[in-house]
Amino acid sequence: MLTALFPIGGVLGGLVYGRRRWRSALARRPLAMAAGTAACWALPALVQAPPAAGAALLVAGACTDVLLIAAYQLVDVLVPAGSRTEAGAWLNTAYNLGAAMGAAAGGALADRPGPAAAFAVGAGLVGLCALVCTPGAGRRGAAGTSGAVAVPVAAGDPSRSR
Image (cartoon, rainbow, N blue to C red; front, side, top):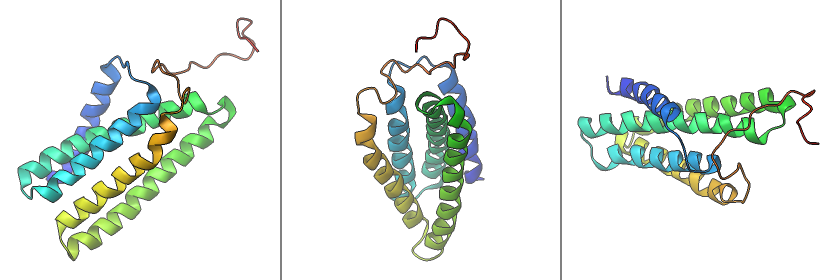
C-alpha cells in the first residue's frame, strides 16, 4: 500500500509543476528535485514509522517525476533538434537502468540489514548525484536563466538568425 504513494506523488508533482510559473533557471530545477528526493528517501531511514514512510514516498514521487520532466526540458534546450530523440532515449534508458539496479540493491539491503539501510543508501546515492552535477548546473548559460524552454523554429523561417 505504501508503495502506491510514490506514483500518486509523481502525478501530483507533475500537475503542480505544469501549472506553476517558474522563475528559477531550468538548469537548477533538477538539482533542487534531486536534493528533495534525497531528503525524502532519508526520512524513512531516520524515522521508521509507516506514516513517515508514506509521506516521504509521496513527496519523493513528486520530486522524482518533476526531476524527469525538467531533465526532458533540458534535452529540448541543450540538444540539437536532430539528436533530441536519441538524447531523450538515453535519458529514459539511464532512468530505467538506475531504477532496475536500485530495486535489486534495495531488495537485497531490505532483506539483510533492513529497510532503513535501503532508504539510507538510496538517499545517499541521489544526494551524491546532485553534488556531482551541481558545478555543471551553475555554469553561466547552461540552460538559460529565465527558466524558459526553447521553442523549435522551422528551418525555413526567415526571422531565424544564423
